[in-house]
Image (cartoon, rainbow, N blue to C red; front, side, top):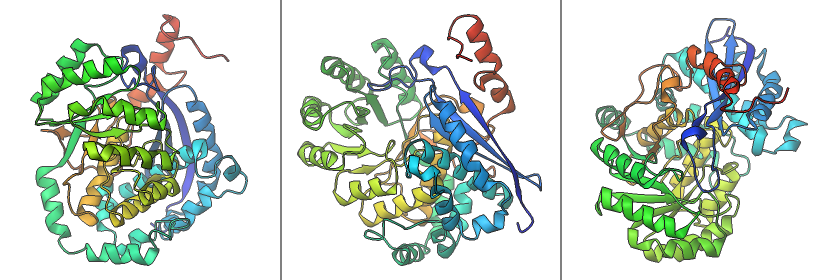
Length: 446
């Protein structure tokens, strides 16, 4: 790895017209076009790393520009200098003296950080010839801890504590890896419950995913209580009482409104309410969680959580019962590992958010590492699965009998097919040009 130098960073605006069929629609995001800022890191030895951060269409160009600006820090670096002290490089990227002002460690700059960091991890795994979950699992506790910046979280977990936890978990790693390879990792589906779907489509999809082995389902809620009751009735009729049902409000409610709304849905035996209020409202989430626990309803959040500090407070305040890391919202794998460690110490299961472009592909690696090296189990843990956009990846996620199958190909499963880039790079891709010409979408202003 000593002679591998990063020579260039390419960034593309990739968009897919999911709004046409209401795929991905929820109470807050009614017309999403699932998109991503897609980063390719190139080297002088022919290796390339591919990373992305998920977006919803408009605004992706802003994230792309942030990636291009931050990429100047990466160009010219040797990979050995990055990976031998990854935590220091991560801090360098997130602490660029002028760019930090428009974060710090949140928003557009942190989305861009995630895309670049994800590409660097993909590159490392490709150099080593391993899928990312295996690269992470094979790192020594010392190596793994050296990738994490513990600034701001030492009041919950220190580097020394993390090292001791990981060392204690070394026993049984091989057996847990064998179990994972044999059985896969459990998944739940959100595909049945997008808010823009008709009742007939919801019924049809419930039947489909039951036949595929799914036993856990999630539905979007929050626009109309009457509609939510009707849709939950439909889903319960189709999936039965023995299967799990979660709901997701995507931040639309105030605190007290969240509590009262969910009391009206308690008869449907809801496992969790996801994102009931503002993702930044730690104390609000704590109030909701305390009020709903007597009804057996947990609180889940994290897909819009800005950084490890917000996660730290959610965990400290007992504001969440399920910790939902997102592979592209906070600053890539390094920061996500710190959240896993805090959640483990404070005994909160991690159940990743995965629904957008490439998110299923990425989070499977993280959760599999957790099972092998940290929590040691998939019990009370599950990965979201949304069945769209996988066809655009060279190594798409594989789900069989409602279980993620561990990837075998080297990397983070983030490389997009050339054909998809030609068709869906925005705005010059062939499909976008066709849709502009046919009036399906308005062409962007020049």
